[in-house]
Length: 160
Image (cartoon, helix red, strand yellow):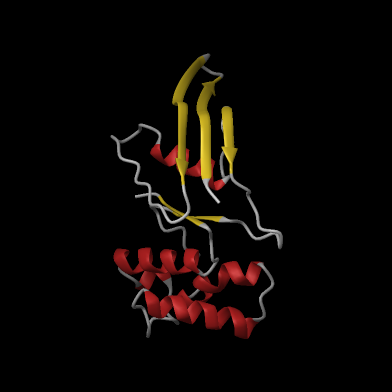
């Protein structure tokens, strides 16, 4: 199933100054199953805003996104890995990676099995009981990737 964007626009309105900031205007594209898409551009050009719109975290001002937001079981089809990692500082690596399956109601044994598989995939075996403040920046990014993969998304979005 393809992801199609038709004439996506995003305008921020600042009441205090009565000004509009056009972040995105007329963005149209199609990404077919199995394809990779990389958005390149200077800082502040709207790449993160477009990813947040695709992820359903921010509504577009205008335009259409043609892709179902959720599976029939209610699970979201997109997952986003943020530039700042967005890890829970009070949760261990294992608990951070288990978070998505936990929210979906997967029993503890099942979600820990899924989490351990993705922790191994990103080469963090042995760090399951560590907290984010005990990890390097690169390790935190791999935890964020493992957490996203544990959600089994159809579309994985990376912001830098």
